[in-house]
Length: 156
Image 1 (cartoon, rainbow, N blue to C red):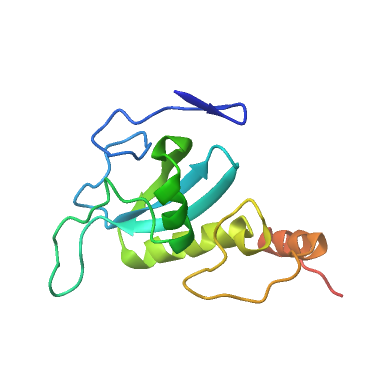
Image 2: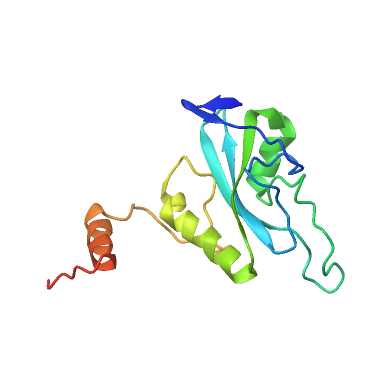
């Protein structure tokens, strides 16, 4: 167990490499997983996705390096080169059965936390796209969208 910001996180006990998750990861029914890397020193986060197996011509069906994988982020790669891995938590949020759902789940998660506008997140790109974001989504926007999603409509 490890404590981060008053939250206790269980360390991995299964053959999941360094990933913390309540279940065994990498079953044949799943194509990949969504993860968060927690920088326990700077209290920052990185969210990404990882495939369990290759889909290309040369590596189709071959198991990926998911158990040892840390990130494709150049910034995090630089950070990992001079800081110990023990200063980070590697958390699997969920596994998914299709590549489309995996990509959607990553995008949804990054939008949900508004990663490009929050300094707590290392992520500044979503699906390799960068927007020149200079303000957060307004509370009115969030409130109105939530109301519409719950079946209430605005007439103005």
